[in-house]
Image (cartoon, rainbow, N blue to C red; front, side, top):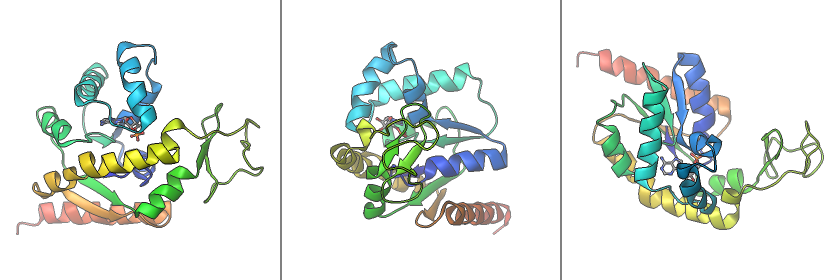
Length: 214
Ligand code: AMP
């Protein structure tokens, strides 16, 4: 799954993994959920908070270890990895990528979706001050009654950095995978259901053209 942060790739990847019974692996979740006092955790945190990419060697160490340790077999959906051409090149020796689902949204939408996001410190539910889901009471979690907060990597400053990093480091992957003819470009504007539908159609068409002898 490829796309700017906030493009909805995480949501779509999880739904697709359930529908197609595939394993789901998110490098961002792995970094967030790991022991923050571990060697890798301590190294990664400052980059994550600043909205920068964690250096490739750390990412590859984490991903290799995770894929091997958990004996992930069969088909998987990768979310947020690879994120640089270097990572993609190294990944080629580990597994084969069948499809790259590239979800495209506008810059304005990126700032609206991520800059407006507020999170509950207790249950980690996300809300948005500009779009749905909004909390019933401003700034308070509907379920826990806790004060919502803005994640460090979602402040305006960090978002600017994340967009720049995305354009410089991650967007070149579209071309990298386009040369292999495996990119499915999906319009990410609209509802979750609409985008889900577009992905389904694109995957069906890709399968059909793989079977087609021409
Ligand atoms: P995400 O939730 O996918 O946006 O990831 C959160 C943060 O984790 C990113 O802003 C990066 O700092 C770091 N991260 C996750 N995946 C990668 C990756 N493949 N390469 C470098 N940094 C990553």
